Length: 479
Image 1 (cartoon, one colour):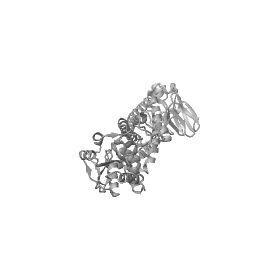
Image 2 (tube, rainbow, N blue to C red):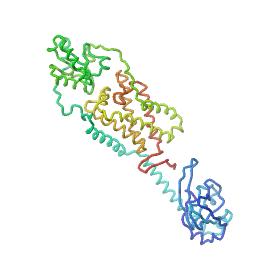
Image 3 (cartoon, helix red, strand yellow):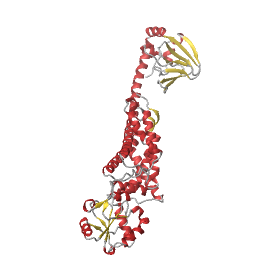
Image 4 (tube, rainbow, N blue to C red):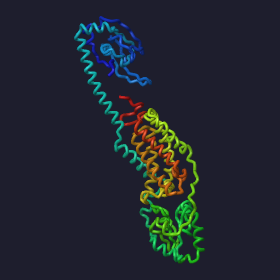
């Protein structure tokens, strides 16, 4: 506790005739009376006016402690202990003071037990008050650092609510679950039966995947009819089938190889709606890779489509990772603020590009082959809004530890998807900005790893410019 944080003591001072000792001085408004850290020389009694007691750190952060008026006194603790002043005092308005030297003060204590007892009583009160204030401050800071389930419910719930509401009014809206409520009356064929038809030359295989997947590997002789280009390519496909000998008696077997069955089921239904007969889908969605002769080309890296400024900014967390190796910088709250702004901008930019075109993003999700059919559209709807909400929370300094945790979780999911795509040689872009994106490679994994490290740094050391349960904090006070 600061020695100058005093209570009104006119009875203890005037009654002991301290006003008859020392030197009377007048200080003007704003004039410094006592400076924190200086050696104690005087004890002061306020006859009139008002003064302010405050502490100030080396970098200029000021904390006001209290205000003292007529009849109060300050400066006695430093004289008793012999320690430097623990706080500064300056006049708020013109004040008249009695300045008592250390020698006079010691003489008074030696011959005035009443004043000594009064000072001891005040010191004991300050110690108790200081302990309570310290406990309250520690509890307050701990609460600020706590991450509750409410934080996650708030952000995730808000993301889901916005995703559902906006999708209702979006001209490009998609169903929550693809095919939900729609009847797919296309029969399935077993892998063994399809092999029999292939050996008898009674099957026409149609690959429903994107051209990049088809070119990389497909059933020998299969035709490619990408679902996303159906309206454009169907006339040519129809002509090709018509030119095939015995086409009317052959079974059209649609396969896609996607875990979500997104492409093959929908394409088969579209073909049947066009009046084609004997259309079936391959029941074992991935069995064709081992059951039929294959052909294709060596995997090619898809062309890189620039992501703009957000794409370049993704490299900054990787660069900052080198700074994190330096302990003082690693613990810096200012680095955490820089990371919040950086990650917030990146995630908001990527989110805005996907929110209004969820169908495009849903197809990118399918490309990774990790999401079941029922989850693709829900993921495509909610994830962009979650990126937007969490990014805004980081930028605004709202519940930043929970926001950093969610972004870290997103990055872990991205990294898992990217690594799986690399090992399976999937010819896809990352899908960060709808149909635009960077090729899936280890550089992209490195970028996400850098953002993951930045999330950890924010979680541990962010305490500057934070709007949290305790209000807006310009800087966390050290206890």
